[in-house]
Length: 145
Image 1 (cartoon, rainbow, N blue to C red):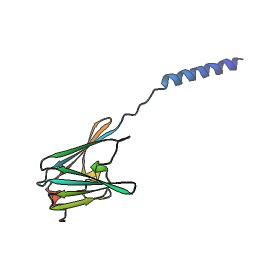
Image 2 (tube, helix red, strand yellow):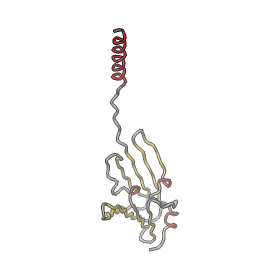
Image 3 (cartoon, rainbow, N blue to C red):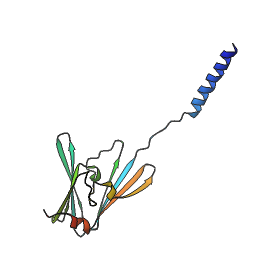
Image 4 (spheres, rainbow, N blue to C red):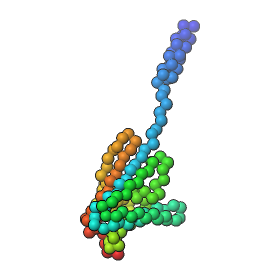
């Protein structure tokens, strides 16, 4: 009889502790911002390619000299389609004079698909930003069409 009382007490204490310690945890959405700054002396045209099923989609962005492009995506359910840094391949055209083409595995220090080439900034618990700046070096690294 004494043992039943002890087990009941332990059971009740365990249930109370579990009720007190349980907290509802809500994951915050995670956001990534991407900035592309054109500090070269050429207008840029960026062709972004994504493979969806058997088809490729192409999005084209233009960044004029001394201008910038910004993009944002929500990582949990946002679409990566059109986000330059998350695409399957990209072509950067410098004023119709030179072209660079990159895929995610490109190790080039000029690849806009290599996150090591971005300036990274943590802006809060659920927001980060990446900035890539195009310079004359990017232009000189590109090839003639």
